[in-house]
Image 1: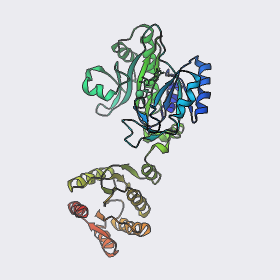
Image 2 (image 1 turned 90 degrees about the vertical axis):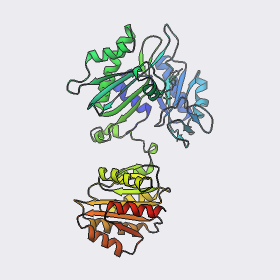
Image 3 (image 1 turned 45 degrees about the vertical axis):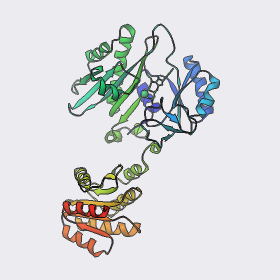
Image 4 (image 1 turned 45 degrees about the horizontal axis):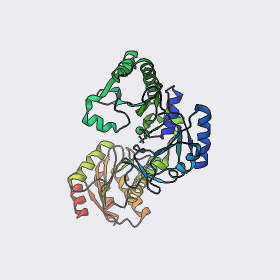
Length: 403
Ligand code: GDP
Ligand code: MN
């Protein structure tokens, strides 16, 4: 699950990670109030206004309606309201949102931390994520902060420092020092970075996160180390033990079909193709998507209805798939192990009748317990549903349906 920058910074602060301070606002008036408060607390006279959407690249992104960037600097208190107005309620388009962009309904008003001083402020990158191949967490850091880290990783991979953490002992002091040293830091900045990395790792670990990306981490002109941006990805499977974090979910940022699917207990991921599919079991779903590709189609989604598909789950799955206007055919591929095929077939027929007026062809492939009975129920129903028992057959039917 993704969360907003202001929420992520709240988590970081709780674990002692030093951050660029900010206050979230819903209106230009609230933004001005927030700026006043920041001025009192931190003494700052410049304010950074940051659109809160679940996508990066906001600094270079543009609000469609006003041409404002998604991250702007206000150099006075009077400047805050008009500049906030140009972002709030607008549609922000960044290289991560797609052309349609994202509606901005919250703004983070933050203190300016790029103030001049003894040294030039410098941006770094620090990330923590799970290295699945090595089976442990890895801390990644780079002196090339601020810019797209994907480009750095691709073009100059030697500029990415990696430190793997042994899960049996956790992050060791020498490892944090090694990272700070390789970043070329000295004196107070070095000490602050070591502390920063330790607190960051504690936060990552304690929240069961699957990714932290702090880009940029800023070394200020007076050698403080601060998280200026924060992208946090929480592990959905661990949310049951973090109710406070689960409550941070912002459904308006998520695909509505995916939200509906989650509420019906379905595993659904929206894709761009023209063949909807409904399958039980994630492995079979992956294989089914391959078969759709081989038959000349493109999967419109990944949908795993789970091991205990019944009429209700089948109907919920149908409804979600049918909402996608790109869908030209639906392939239902169920292996009857625990669930019996005749029951699924009844579910399909019932759901079909309940929804009514389904215009796209439906191909059902049932295999396993009571497969023959299932196929018969479908054929006898008189509905525009084609049944297939062998997967190859099903693929052929999909091909015919698309022709
Ligand atoms: P992103 O574009 O969505 O990744 O948003 P960031 O939070 O990373 O901010 C984008 C850019 O805004 C940063 O790389 C900085 O250059 C700039 N920025 C952020 N905070 C400040 C600040 O306090 N002062 C100034 N002058 N610039 C800032
Ligand atoms: Mn950033």
